[in-house]
Image 1 (cartoon, each protein chain N blue to C red):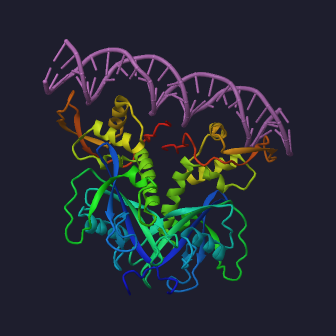
Image 2 (image 1 turned 180 degrees about the vertical axis):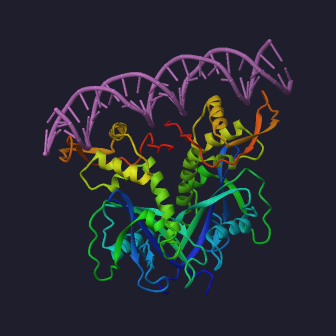
Image 3 (image 1 turned 120 degrees about the vertical axis):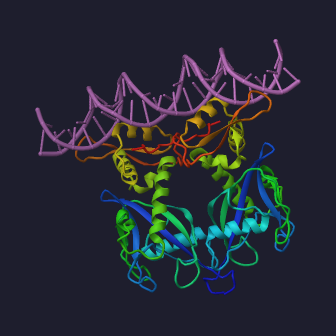
Length: 228
Length: 228
DNA sequence: CCAATAGTGTCTTTGAGACAGTATACC
DNA sequence: GGTATACTGTCTCAAAGACACTATTGG
């Protein structure tokens, strides 16, 4: 093997908020190594595609989810020499945030992909292939800090959404309860974060104003998670 | 070429504060492509080494700087298909922060490396190899946000250092003037950031207390850069 | 003395957080 | 009416920023 010859893959940590828990999209491996174990979706980078494109393509191939309309960005690279027992492999990991949409039925290339509760996958008792548990931990930590400084939390919500849904996202990702009133004031006060639709929800109590994602990207000032 | 065969390199954006400006360590390329142009130091990842180790090794090989005692962490991966005209190459970029120490004299493998003012390298009129100008821009932006949330700013200072030196680091990296009094109160108030040595400087005015880097990693609460 | 830099005092403003109070739906 | 959730009012507290003031050195 020439020293330059390294296999390069992209792996995806696709997160959503589902049933009051943070969930991650996992596939069951059909081949060795780690056959039958849980793994993050991913695959080899093609010769002529950018890393971002490879991530979007793998997302469609392995899960049927279109990258358009979800938030997808690079997390970091992992290249510990023994991370893949077959050969030297460096993986470029991506983090995706999406609403809790029904998964397309697996067909063709698409492997069996399903939502798993993040805490279960992070539990050392759960068998997970490669270093994917480590990667998922980093992805979740990244998601937590992203919510503090950027408007990406809304990427978890199906439009249109009420502020309480957005607050629930923050509460679940951060694992902290937030004051509804203060949260509402805060997010509506950030210019360009939420665009009111004029519609209102009709559930239990007083109807809540519904919003769509606005053009703003950054939260200034940030929305720092409470110390405890 | 099998689709898995991709060359993997590490590149380094080594930053320091020098002569009242942010500077980056650049090498002059001795080989094609981009012969004679400025580039970030870097090289191929060896078959049996971790990415972090490869970055530390390249730092020593190309610049003679020991990684011990400077801050080195992964920035992100770049893999645009045409970024290297020879063949498909993915680079894992690292960001290093270090004090303004004299560069070891280039010898043996070490190419001619020198400090360049970051703004000059970012100027489109300056010829820079590969996508290294883009990478440097990302590195600087990352450094700016790192200073807000973490204690790594002190990695730019030669120990022991006065608070004014640390403030100067912040001012240069952020491009903003900071109030000396308020800055002093802020950084001394963060537990574990600065450890007083008991010594004092003796320059122009009143002697300043000298400090070393403390064990703290994060700044809580953060030290957010002023809007303008 | 003056100039220069270090560091403190203190006031103002901003924003977070607690939490009471009001609004508007469904039963 | 009661319950549930949405939102607003208001108070308190923490921290940032402006800036005057004092402290300690070298000329």
